[in-house]
Image 1 (cartoon, rainbow, N blue to C red):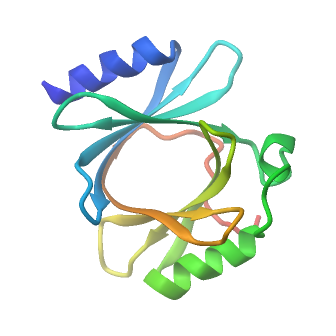
Image 2 (cartoon, helix red, strand yellow):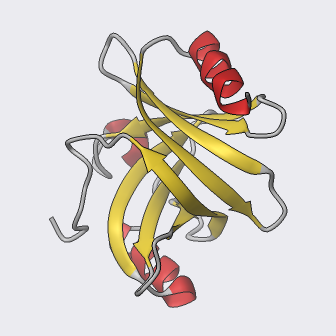
Length: 156
């Protein structure tokens, strides 16, 4: 019951409505992971990463509305366009979604979902908004739920 264990662990860290759950293969050597998105009572969204084998939460991030959000923009040095270029130059694919994440230490990053032609899976490429380096790569195996305001086209 690792998913149930992860959902319970996530709720013990952040109370709120579970908006979305994704099952990820984290590269290169990370454990299979559930990314659980929770919206709290103040309408703030949190992403919790849970080790699918152990049921332990190992990362907590919050989401900013946009790259212009004060908490995100305060430290960001890399533009969204440059982050997308970095991800696409390395992995190709079409941008499905861009999220603006703030790590627990306050550092901003772009999470860019890239769809590959002819494949059902998506690459999730996390680009550090300060250095421009790719700091995390995972492959989405499946997703339950979807937020209505998810960005579908990065040019909007």
